[in-house]
Length: 285
Image 1 (cartoon, rainbow, N blue to C red):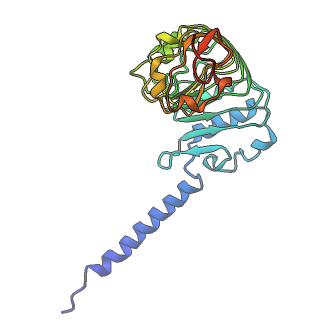
Image 2 (cartoon, helix red, strand yellow):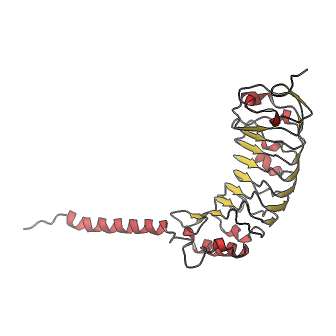
């Protein structure tokens, strides 16, 4: 009686499974799992952006996860990243982006986008969105209260009004609203318990008492120059390992906190102000 080894039957099965796994991985790699509804939304985005020549790769014959500027979840095929960077496109922010509900990253920086920032660009409508770049456009009006993404950059637009009250309770990692026409109190971005490491408010019309601000523990980039900020520089600034620090062109007064890292920055980072004194400016009288 001849015994048949179970391995003779098992091996072809395992080889077949391996082939299927490799085929699925290849399908994911070339974007074959592109979600159909996301693909339709992206084609609508392309149309709203005027079918720019640099988006010619966005077409119905190619899988959308392989399109330039698009990344997808390898398992679900849902679009997670949308990048249309520096193409000089003149259009409003496309409404069809709201249908890409698995987005984590949106980068539309350095175009000529105009109109308001849509309310759907935030975790309320796009729950996984943590990174939003709209800098270097022509967007106007107020920042919507829904724009509470972890990393937010809307610098270099024509935005007006105060920061949304909702920003006080938001968890930011970095905020860049520089080079706009924003006003009011931006101290809501600060606080000892917050995790924000970079705050850039330069060239706006913010007015608040910097001396009453508690610096977040992780904050190592602070650029608040060219505003109407008053008070003094918090004493805690002396102990920080600043990567960037600029409080020039404000109404600050009092002694500059002296520390190893504040000493790295020259007078142009502190002056002019109302009456700041101490290194690197003139000694306090």
